[in-house]
Each structure stands twice: as C-alpha cells, then as structure tokens.
Length: 275
Image (cartoon, rainbow, N blue to C red; front, side, top):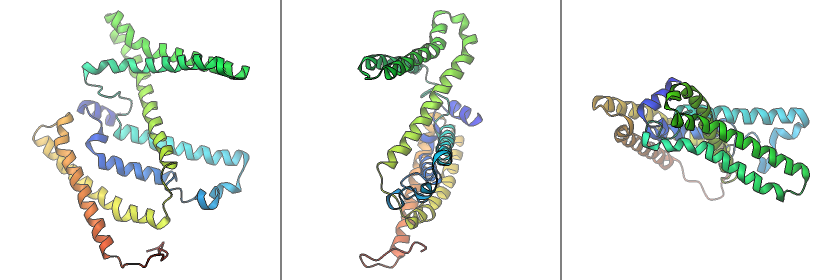
C-alpha cells in the first residue's frame, strides 16, 4: 500500500518514472512464467506441448491453472509497483475527475451490447446466458456509478461514500490493469517467434542484468538530484528520463562490445547453446 500511496503523492506512476525498470520486469516476468517467446520448457513448435503431453484430465488442468495463476501474480506485482495499483489514471488531477464515469459507462455499454446480441444467438441457452451477462453488467454499472453520483446529488454524504468509492473503483482499475498486462502476454505469444535457450541466456546475462545494475545506479542519482532541486510529480521526469536513456545507451554499448569480441562464425554453423 505504501508503494501505491507514494505514486499517489507523486501524481505519476513509477512505470513512467523508471521505464527501463518496468521493461526489465516485463521481460523477466514473461520468462519466469514460461510464456512465449520464452516457452522453453514446452517448445510447442517442436515438442507439441512439452511435458504437458504426459498428463490429461485433472492433472493437466492443475498445470494450466498454476501457469495462469503465476501470470496473475506477476501481473498484480507489476500493477502495484509500476502502474499505480488501484489508482485511476491521473488520480490527483481534479479536472480529469470525469474519468470516474468511465467504469459505469463501460459496464453499461457491455450490457447494451449483450442485449443487442441476445436475439442473434441460435440456441435458447445462449440467449439466456447473454441476458444473464447483460444483467450482471447493468448491476455493476449501478454499483460503480453510485459512489460517483451520490456525492454529486448530496455533498453531505461524500465522506460516507468515499470508502465505498475507493474500494469499488479501486478494484475495477486494479483488475483492468492486471487484465491488460495478461492480454499483453497473450499478444506476445501469438506475435513473436520462440527464443532458443542460448538466446535467452544471452539476453539475460549480457543485456538485462548490466542494464538493471546501471539503471539502479542512475535512477538513484536522478532521485537525489530531484530531491535537491525539489522536483516531484511530472517534473521528476526531467531527472529520471535522461538517467533511463543513459542506462540504455551504456547497456547497448556493452552489448555491442561483447558482440564485436565474439569470433565470426560461418553461415549455417550451429550455435553453441552453452557458450
């Protein structure tokens, strides 16, 4: 909670203040959850489903449940550390408070869409399911809209309604950010080819680890400079963004030197996975 409160006090998410750290965590989380393009234990293109071919039924479902639970955990950590947690975008910018109307309007729009699609469903069960989903969406729209509309109608109830607003809207924004993070996982899975074992090791040891170490040092210096010149919020970007750019340039320079020092291999030569 203190991490989220720090982002609220700064008025900016840490993912914007430290984009290199966010990128490093993103790549590491994809590799940790064994998702493409780092699905080395499965290697679906060569081994069908990897070790999954040995299981079926309940055991198979447990493996998949564990994999997606791991994805939800890393997405929740990323949301808390870098994406503002349960805070809405620009939570401390009062002239953008109209964003609070987005959750109920979004749920109402989904409910209207489900109602319009209901008559087009071929089976009676499908029509009933669409009606149930539409009803749930409208109920969520009412629940999300009440904490916003009640203080506008009766300002005296603003203090009493605020805990409900923080809980309901905070849960909506947190789930939305986690869902967007997981969707990005799936988008990468269907977009990028799979890395080889040696490519993943080279990416981690020769690029991401030096980049992370340099980034920690430079971001620390940038934070000290920001404290000295009383920079906060969006003005702190004046110190952190140059630090992130310098860290990226240094890491790329180190990677270029490492690539230059490698012996040239003839075309068609198989790579050494343990080099």
